[in-house]
Length: 90
Image (cartoon, rainbow, N blue to C red):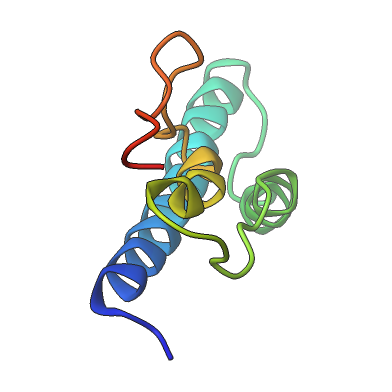
């Protein structure tokens, strides 16, 4: 059974992962245009490669807020190392 928060985090990470792939691809295409290369021929190859490089978070598991860290790490929104999740919330 999936809680509403689990579903929200899952959807949030998936949509942001897609956005990151698109953003990185557009940045690379802009750089490609500036260097005089044919950008549109590379578009699908770039998207596939970038999506492959970004890890997929998998299923939520565990207890507390720590269970969301692996998902949020994919889109670089996990808790910073110097400010971990408080133990009463983990």
